[in-house]
Image (cartoon, rainbow, N blue to C red; front, side, top):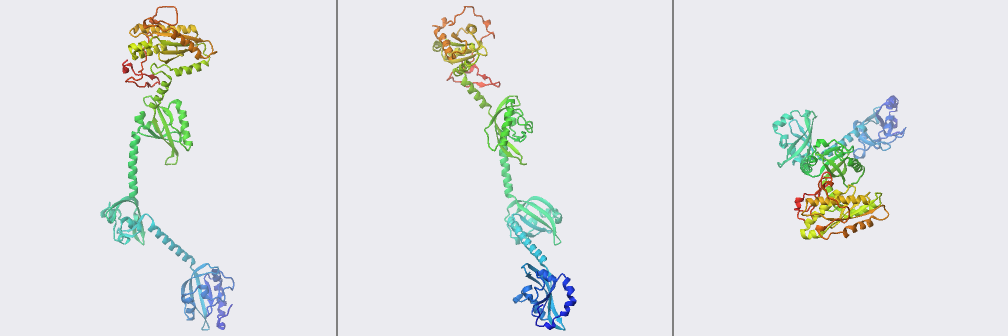
Length: 595
């Protein structure tokens, strides 16, 4: 204990009387002498300030409790005047921890003489921290309200503004001071005073969301959406409105609607079919033009598997293609497949798809299917014309020579090759014209085709030359086939005496594959060229056989089929043949070419 200048007057006797109270009270208590030095402190004070034992004794109270105005704490000055009081202080503990406390102080007397003073401290640190936090929260909330992009306004039961943030003022073009003089109907363009007073007669019960239009100070109108919540503030009924300007949103919505309308028109009128497939292979959506393109209603397609109505030969390939699109992060070339329309016809389509996700983040395929039936038919036509003679419809030299090589490597021996030339074909062209010559070529091709078997290959080699490959045919059988050809020619000539057909035929047979069929063909080609008749009336057969009368009954159909016409190159009405629905080549009727 450090003694002060009035050592003999220190109230030592009080310590014994009040020691128990000092040690057990929750308030921090200290005594100090007239010089302001502490000569006693209770455990609560040591605990609050972080001191141990007698560490605090002898320290000045202005150092412990903080200086006041003028550099000295008013506590000591008041005590020396024999006065007490109460103040709030801000100081710190021994470790520097901030302490906020409420201090009650007064003088201590011993034998009627001033012996010093006392100070009783109640900690208000927690309440001060709460107040600071509330203050900070209020600042943050005020900043948030003022800076947020939404207009916020508080309206009382008289429908006047009692508070509004800066954004609300900006939306209407008023200052915040001007807003305080406005009522709802002054800025709401859709609500009259009567309607406002009726619908919002009890603001505390309002809890709604609605759209309306606000009027700016300059008279312009703009759309808003409002969330309104009724409450009481200070016992007064109010409504808090949060307003959002939706001008841009509505412009975007209108633009989107226009875009959707254009896209809907495009989809409905497009020649391509649009559809969406989910991961299970079901069609979630198909464009309305499915009715125009394939004859089906949307209800007949949506919800069905994507392979419905697809050609059995293409269905498995289509499903694999779709799985590949789902599993890969790249595009693939379009898949071509056949689908049956409502009339039962097979149409060719090319499908392309891109992976995407739906509104539930489930994988989907956005697909476009384009009708390529004409393209496929044209490809078939080109393929046919690449292997066939366009005038007669028979195979051409290219195909014939390829077949010579292929069949020559096979086991269909004996094989007989037949060569056929038209007699005096040039004379017919020169005297009757090329159209007459074309008719003879078509007639010859038709008779050869009808006279041979389905397994035989007959071709026009060029000009007036024809050839045929007769598999599994020896010389005797080939001679009988030649007889049938001549009989059919004679029958034709009897019905068409104005333009008779005369041919020279040669044969050569290979018993086995010991030599190339090309050499055999050369031997067969010698016969026609060495037996050409000198004129049309005396033309005979280059293969000798027993003379017998020709009878029409030898023709299995009862009539020689008419030649299949095809326009010569350069004909005015020339066009490519068409592929019919069964895949067969269909030539236009003869009347188109004036033959």
